[in-house]
Image 1 (cartoon, rainbow, N blue to C red):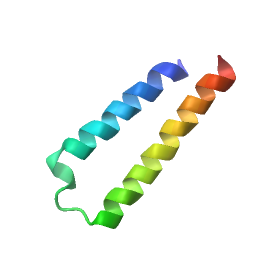
Image 2: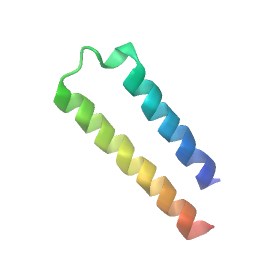
Image 3: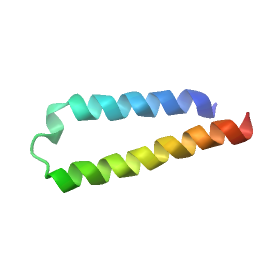
Length: 52
């Protein structure tokens, strides 16, 4: 269950970075969102390791 969620979130992050929606954002806003999603991605990967 958790393993399938990690690649999905990674793809979401990549899609967001390649989208036009970040064009109007400040560098700090982009960085903040990446940190938030990056920590979530790491949490899901850790859960995969713990619960597998």
